[in-house]
Length: 327
Image (cartoon, rainbow, N blue to C red; front, side):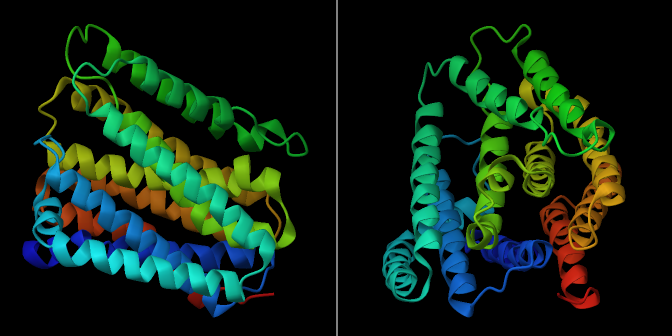
């Protein structure tokens, strides 16, 4: 079983499944009709990003981030990387032929942001990388969380500043007494990656209706981004074993973050329209499952936790697609 999970993770198939399911959830929430090419392009893009990320981690000297999936991807790099290039070229060709111009333009902007994320990842692993970068990234994420849409009651959005406060508190705990240890990039990098992943899933549905404000900082996108952050952070903390000072500090705030997102999903469900409610319900259930998984993590085999964490995000979205009729 651990070998199978490592192969699935090394190929990024778990992330592709989550992306496609939640893209459909966003389409239902926004009332947009997507074509097969949009799902195909997103699937290839997510697969390519995750494969390259695994290869980069596998080739790095950072033992703290290397797992079986990274080592597998590094060993298979001679056929994985060419496959990514061929599939990426095919996806670009399909996008230019089949997708609306507004979707393609938005995708190009997201691709630039993903490239910047990769560059940031490389720079953050250099010796002597300072803490100004992670502080700026985390400050930006917290700032966006605290800028809720004015048309909705503040009580329904209380989860946003609370989660932002947890993020800033996490950075404070990590940096307190850090001394000359490596820069505090775990939480900022996970938050930025989750944010970009959520953008990718929501991009086509929001581009069709040109709802740019909702795409950048709407409750639907941010609640899902927060769930993705909880997912990746849980996997990192469990696989790391909590041996590092940074991981121990983040473990202290993780339950509060997860409960905040779960409660936020419920609060948003109460105030959302009937079409957005399934999305918030799925997010609340996913966050609740991650809370349960965090509580049970020491009683489960370590290799099983990443699989269950991905299932906690995938299955609620899949349930929405099966049980909730479209418009």
